[in-house]
Image 1: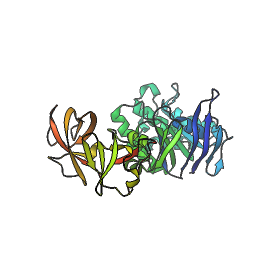
Image 2: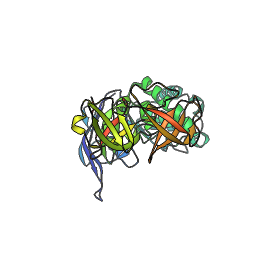
Image 3: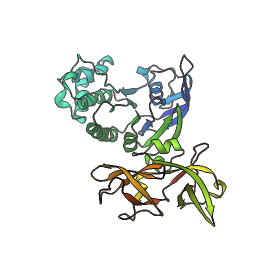
Image 4: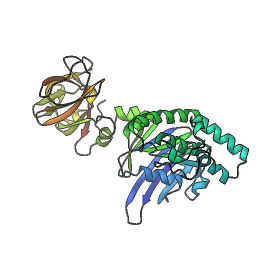
Amino acid sequence: MAKVEVNNVDKFYANGFHAVKKVNFIAEDKEFVILVGPSGCGKTTTLRMIAGLEEISEGTISIGEKVVNNVLPKDRDIAMVFQNYALYPHMSVYENMAFALKLRKYKKEDIDRIVKESAELLEIENLLDRKPKQLSGGQRQRVALGRAIVRQPKVFLFDEPLSNLDAKLRVQMRAEIIKLHKKLNTTIIYVTHDQVEAMTMADKMVVMKDGVIHQIDSPLEIYNNPVNLFVAGFIGSPAINKIEGKIIKKGKKFYFKENDIELEIALAKNLAEHENEEVVMGIRPEDIYDSKYDQMAEFPQKLTAICEVVEPMGNEFIVFLQIEEITFTARLDPKRYPQIDEKIELSFDMKKAHFFSKENEERIILE
């Protein structure tokens, strides 16, 4: 297997559009790296440059210590799994999986062995005689994976492979790909716009927007310590609550204040330099509790809000609430069903709150 290194890579199109801007990241040998971001952020373009399907305007890409800028896709020892499966409709599953091996002049008995081993790994050995039109979406995706696996490449590249599947099948296939990664012990670079996919599958996440990398780290580190307002808002479902206000000081304590809302800040080590600064407070829905039933907050600050909408999820309620003109969401334990227009006393866990400069949207480090 191999390490993939993307070094100061830019992509300019003929019309002058700058799609990818000085992108730098490393996918270590056997690591599962996910490029994640909104549509049009440059993640697929970056993947296609690694594959050799897009020309690199500036910078270098290395696979296994070898710079591959001028190496043809077929000579990069990579395998790519596409969003639309890209199966040959006139070929059987067996023929689809065997095709690349035939082009490489493998012996017939070796092709048969490799295809059957891969089919067994993916649990599609009973589908080898079928044509793609006879398969479900999940089965087609497994065949697309199988066609990549038989090539035994150094690196697997996945371009939004689960986006055409229904929600239940996506969850199942996520688990299958994670297990496959462990079995194959290979390097994977995976593109998705679905932050849930990224959070649940990646060893390392590369968060992109407008062709720029905003943060590279493990999923939990990015979730718990987003570097800016964009990353905080993009990662997490339901999305983090964003409330604009100001940091003020009373005596030796610092508070977040917006009109009549006043919340003491738990971690105030570096706040003296931000006194009276306009900020955005970010607090995740799961860090807001119903004061009457939950005592989970480490540093609770209480506010009363009006319930506007309730979304019952079975094991929890997603509740849309309002305080003055501010609307936000809370993920509440279903100990009771909140009523529309009901006043609910909430505990904001201010130890979990994040603060971002309103001017540049960068995170203010409190400790």
